Length: 204
Image 1 (tube, helix red, strand yellow):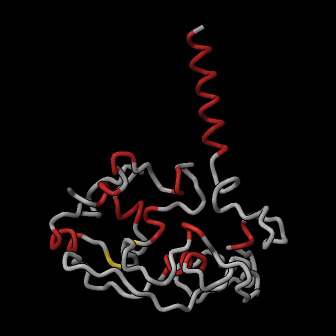
Image 2 (spheres, helix red, strand yellow):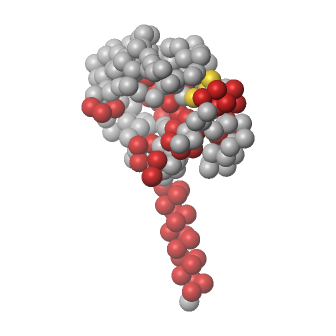
Image 3 (cartoon, helix red, strand yellow):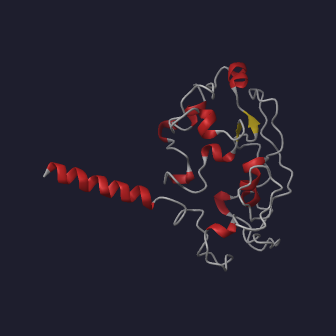
């Protein structure tokens, strides 16, 4: 009986894991009025004629922001290559900065339906976590309160560098899984209960 109960619980848990994903998440736009296709993936991705102007863009189908951003600044920030967001972070901001319409995909360039509410970051990123900067052993050593990303385990299977950085850089998707793979609130790559996500990198 106990064995049967364990098997049943295992099947329920496996089903819950399989059910997690972009469908039904905050990034499922298939039912939004501005997405007349009714599809999920097409608002960001296309198999043909993708935008290749941004490094690392995966078959990109959405208009890319051209905004200039006000960056995070602090006397305690030791990163020396913090500049305008690039790579995958620029793709995130192509909706979240509010200057590009959500409907601006597949060649559409209008701003009829810009993002609103708490998802709107705007172009002033001064109070947001910095992105698109190199996070390596040198930075960790200089800062003194960051873990070495090349050796410290991320809790996601390998090192911080392997699991969370993009070409050695901290990006929006270092902390956020846009496809909601783990099924965690706020599209996080791992739970931030008791600041666990923050403490993956910050040695406090």
